[in-house]
Length: 567
Image (tube, rainbow, N blue to C red; front, side, top):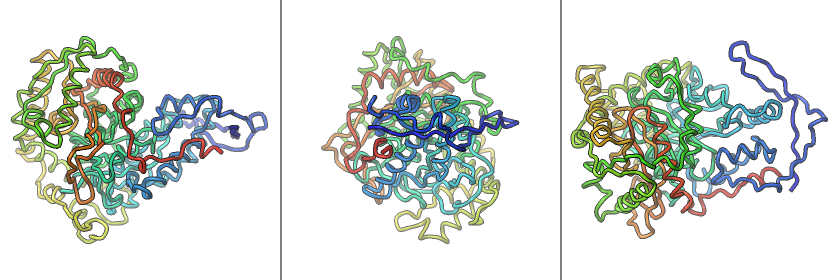
């Protein structure tokens, strides 16, 4: 198959402040026009599994362009998002993406690539801000924020753009990152109900639901999610992915619709630990607009250097069974018992890879964490203060909503948009609105959280048992200690529910568990231990290759490939 590529000439403007090249396509010089590339020289990557490195190899070799990639991903989204299985994983696509891709293709032709993300499409969770001039909204899934104008790109978006990534679109999510009320994971007023691609109408988990589903079946190369407590980790597990919930302060939250500055963090969701490490290496780092990032180590490592298949050899990995496994739904004979069985097998793999598994290695604070209401106090208080500040800081908002009280009133006044039957709850909004600011009880709860999750929790277990990390299934209460302490979690595929599992109800339109739905394995550590955790997760991933054992159900697998848009 012969593919004709036409390249533009490039005009370079070195911007006075950033010195970043601005690339504009003008006319096509005869010297490079009509360059022919034989796409049959090497197989084109299958977009269902294509890695960042495979995509870069093809781009560098001239097999295809970033324009081709955008067209292919757009077509794949069109196939399954609102048609066919109606996964509702994408709220909107970027109308500027093709123009940006053409510019980056031209820049590559003259200067080479900026980074491993040059020309690579990335989906953002719809709570991560992008400037309005690009043509996309930032709404947290709510009609109340539709057509609002943010003052700037989010800090992580600035880093992605500087690296040459292309923002492909915005992913659906649990509305307001699952902090509106008692609503099912993956539902938002704007986006409707996101569903898992591994079983019809299965729970994708949340709140980064769309980020998980889009990445799981190749509607994007990679995605960004955010986590306050479980919102990267759980959808990573439920969608057969690799994901990193970074330490609070490793990645900027500036320009991200908030829940709590003490727990919010932004991280990658990808089809491999390698891709997650590439993205994390780009988005990590200090940001003057997020003072929590000043606490990170002075030098952010290249996380791809952690990708060592021998990383577990000699490591000491602890299993905190009390509360997190013992007596939980993951053990015994219940519908989630497949997770517990797979976890025990995973421990054997970790041993085979040379690690010492310390089992049990319980957290001294485990029972107190299970009983504690401190996290609720902190999140309810923080959300009211921080969402009010976000709304007040918008340049414009057509709905007129400028406070949490206004949000509650907007939803009640627009039930057809925001409160359809079975999706009416605003319980979290209402509880947060009832808070009265930074009280003594708030500061006490915040201090107790840090103690329970850190000094008497993860850090205590690591020190007591001389451990390098902890390991647990991604489901259940696994995320809570790391959430309240602000510590990292790295998750990889663990297994899939068997065909005979009893199908349960997860919401008005979703089911869980269900046959073939994935679940994940999480490595936890102390603050800023991502490098080690990525190494452990990579060694396990490469040994097991669990992701490749099963694909999505047939109707949820898009058919469009690069060859279809390159004709």
